[in-house]
Amino acid sequence: MARRTALVTGGAGFIGSHLVDRLLADGWTVNVIDNLSSGRIKNILQAEKSKGFNFFEGDLCEQDQIPGAIRGCDCVFHMAADPVIRGGFSDPGKRDSTFRNNVLATRNLLEAMVTEGTEGIVFASSSVVYGEAAEVPTPEDYGPLKPISLYGASKLAGEGLVTAYSSGFGFRYWIFRFANVVGGRSGQGVIHDFISKLRADEGTLKILGDGRQRKSYLHVSDCVGAMLACMGKTGSDIFNLGTGDTLSVDELAVIVEDELGLQGVEHTYTGGRGGWRGDIPVTELDVGKLRAVGLRPKLNSEQAVRLATRELAGTG
Image (cartoon, rainbow, N blue to C red; front, side):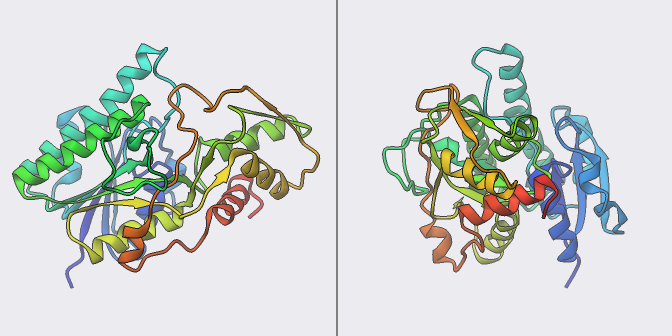
């Protein structure tokens, strides 16, 4: 079988770098394009030792920086994005960067795929495209989709661009709506936040919201494995990637404290149903479609949080 070649956008980032490692292990040639705004070279140091790896420092918002990276690729894994969901409503600069990095960049990438004749695209979307869904667990065919964060709106716009270009130009596509993905190399998110706060003060933990928010936590290894498995089993489609269970933020905090060997930590709260403007208090994805093709994550939410805590704290 001929060696396949993939472009991974944002391949020096959290999920992207884990995907790069897995693709190389599976025998792919892998090109990475990353502007290193949130990605880190240290995440791809091991990958750089592979003869099948090529790194391009470039910005997808600049159309002329894409062709060298995408040329000769069979498939694009579009992982690049402004990764921070929080913020934007009070920050015009954040609103601009979310649009440029999540919408304009996607459009530029799709145009490059048209020019180069690339066969397919995997798009990293998010559960936040559903907004505060009336149906929980939420299936892929739920609608109308009403995101309440600018990040969610940008991901929904990206989905629309992917399906439209795929219809018009014959690409195959796989859109994955992620639960909260956790694991080593993550530079933001609730586990990273809690570890940082507890290292600064082992006796008190300030929690955004009321602590009763409930969400699913998917380990990055299960996320990457599910994406690649779905590609091998299905044609163009949209999949929820989650665990089928949830944890409250309070429960997650206790798990993190336990993994750090801490007891009796006092919790304080900022109050409100959500942690910030645009936060969805309760999110759970219906993963029946994933199970229908024979896929289940190896770790549930608690196991994923425990492993991620050990990885991020350097104790695992």
